[in-house]
Length: 118
Image (cartoon, rainbow, N blue to C red; front, top):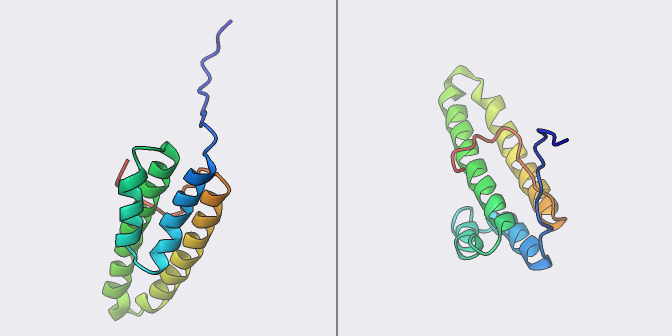
């Protein structure tokens, strides 16, 4: 008797896929947009794993840029003095966690990220 369960199956990413997905996050420490964009554009059609991590990274960058803008706007209300360091610290931590998860072959969704690119 068939069930109506949805099975979320992902093929195990290769070592190269994991390395390139990790490089999307690591290269962001040197070039926030250009390095990750080059890796993602060159490799996204070759691996759904790299494509997923590239989309996740750019959704993360856009989302946290919005949060930073909100922090700058609210600095006049003195809330921004709290928001800006928290956003910066979370951005740094989630980038490192994303790199580790990608290298371990895990499908990772960065917290507080708005899914602009699907």
